[in-house]
Length: 316
Image (cartoon, rainbow, N blue to C red; front, top):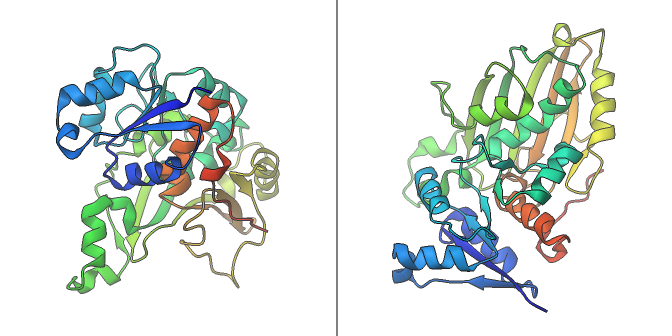
């Protein structure tokens, strides 16, 4: 049986290494590798990109765009983990749990953009509410997202894990305070919102894990809908292995941001009360928020699940 040839361009980065570690023992896959010198050779990279069946781009945005332009073989499937192509024409946003049409587009596409880590939580919470006319596409939303420091890549990991680190790293730190985070564009592009939310990402002193919360007032809900209608929509839409709505997921009134660290699935929950509602998604920023999301795309392209590459946390 012919193996699927996979090339990871940018294998040395955090996401690239995770994808490589997930695929290296899968018998149906042949990983194409380049030595250190060849990784810096544009002709060798181009050869690898055009000789594989599936290429993962685990690169900075500009480098990912450059790599995509190197493809001359029409049969190569590109899966880009960067921000470069998430809202670009001709590329499919890779979030199959949003619905059947999204899944079909992924299956039929040769250009797939992996969702951003922060954006994944916001989109999974807001997309079905706009889809079902629970909130307006003109809604003014505020979202908080707390993440482990691994999302900042090798440089930030080194800063947090240094024996001589500054005491500031022990405190949660809000960033992107100018409201120009690069995930905002895809957050409105995919959900259908026509205005960007107030987005408050926070990096904290734990390796991986992510918790995204969107706050709603009762007045934000259209046509007399209530918090119970939101729960019903989530329960019906998100009941699979990878994304699942759960109830009573708190720990005596607390929600741990790293609860899903090391796992590949995402849990959705609703808290608050009838007047002020909290929508929350918890997952691993390196799992469903990055490498797991990329692996999910290859599963759809191969027409089967690579179960060996999954680590599912059974939740409630």
